[in-house]
Amino acid sequence: MNPQPSGEVTQLLADARGGAPGAHDQLFAIVYAELRKIAANYMRRERADHTLQATALVHEAYMQLVDQTRVNWQSRAHFFGVAAQLMRRILVDHARNQGAQKRGGNAQLLSIDDSIGMAAVSEVAFDELDEALNRLQVLDADQAKIVELRFFGGLTVEEVAEVMGVSTATIEREWRMARAWLHQQLTAERLGGP
Image 1: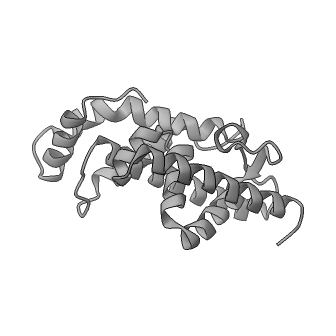
Image 2 (image 1 turned 90 degrees about the vertical axis):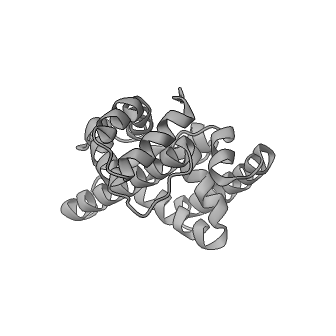
């Protein structure tokens, strides 16, 4: 990501939450490019004929973000972490709706080999990855959040550490363990195992 000044984004988030005139427009102008990068990161892993476009994903996520009246935005990284989570939810819901319409045909696949380092599992249905992440969430919520922020949000190790309030060494260690666990889970699913 090409970060904007953290203080400026954080202040605009507070202003927007407080109803300051023009704050939403200023915030959107500043964060749009980074939200677009996150959305493009998601969409790059989707089928070429995906019916949801990155711009629509950004706008839908942004509208949900600014409606978050109960969130006390701590920083720019916190905002983009939540944005990544919302985009994941939007895409999962979209994939499920499309799958229901097609009765299981042509499940949407996304490429995970580069980000998660899974040479044996190069493509996985979005629902499969979401289900695996939900299982990881039960076992280790921090690891699941790290995967979401790194893989879906495109945040750097340093940005994830800032969002989670831990050291970069901790994030690197947990990221490696989460990738290994996901690799095992997704490989087993592909091979028909438990």
